Amino acid sequence: MRKLLAVPAIILPTIITLLAWALPASAETRIFIVENQPDGYGIDQCLAAGANCGKPMASAFCQSRNYAQAISFRRADPDEISGGRASGDATCRTLVCIGFVAIECAR
Image (tube, rainbow, N blue to C red; front, side, top):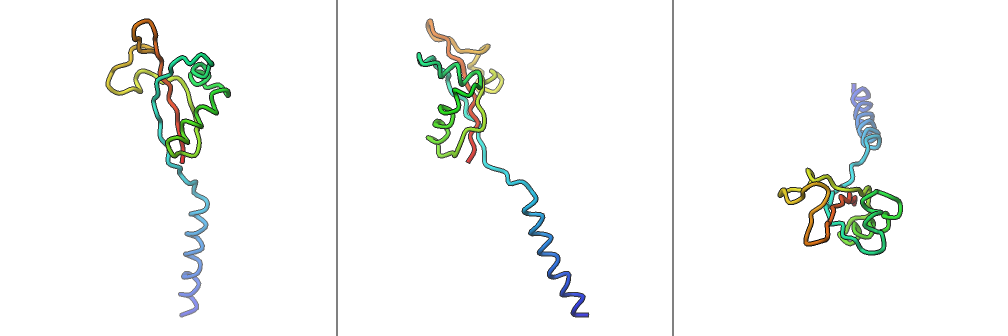
């Protein structure tokens, strides 16, 4: 009878361990909404378009906030911005209209 109880005692932890390895680990992520101000270098256009040229800037932004990397970056929809301050794709101040970019960072 003891041999029958010993087998499940070994198999059960093994099954639990294998299941833990099989399940994907979820990384902590956060989406930052940032003003996309024209800088004269075109970085603003790279970020808004989600183009490869914006990857170094998005990664530097995430790292400055203690995240490991940028997962994605794109133009932010006005619905994503709380407070109802954004109208259309940009907020206009004087003669300059500023869009918003969503940068998703992961730890």
